[in-house]
Length: 330
Image (cartoon, rainbow, N blue to C red):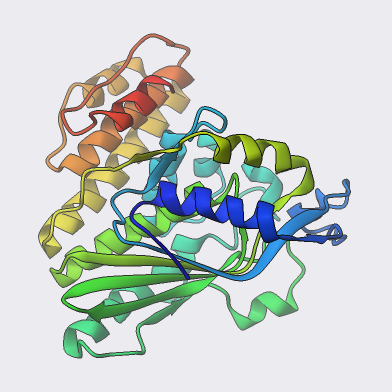
């Protein structure tokens, strides 16, 4: 397992490993899989099996490169959608094109990680956090995403995530994300942001610091037609960008989630209905928590762009440096 301080370090090291040691694999042919372009394309890929990476600082969760700009509004939107336990397809579609192609019914995403972890069969995340509270040495704090029934249904969604494993060790929360498959170039930045955000939330519920974040992948890969892009990314320095940390208390963590979910929903609905006044109101009022305030600035700027306003930029004292630059680039 490779050890890194930031996600940016881990990201570039993983891409270098695939370029240097990855095996060439023929295209998936399943017409229900994105890996075959849903049966329309030949997509050979390069992979490493059983790849692991350890990140010391889960707040340093963004990797910024000019060759592959990160969609920060999608990062925040995905985190809010997941922490709210939803599985509607319209929310992710608001932030990125193509979300509907994964939906079987054009209304829901059956494999939505947050929905499966937090709502579909009870709140697994709170349950495993409770187990650790009652017994800090617990080893049964594993929350499942992939379910047995996924092997017995025909669907465009077969979750890439297996589940998450939590450990309280050395006074901090170690979080392990177990992926059956991880697209390492264009998808990993969003999966890592999501799960490191969830880790910080869980740590706040336990009233402990966030410890190492570990990402395990059964297959760690990118496609052959992405090789040149991967080389460009690793040939130049990738900037590590940190977000404001979650508050270190249960009440503080819950307040972050409440504000984040509320900002995301209200701004998205206002933009979709053309309600500029509602966006103006949200953009003008600072959040109570630094993490949510940086999200407010980003999501409000995105809402203005959806309304056709390419000039309005919402700022926040919590979104300085690299985060401010990412918001400005929306």
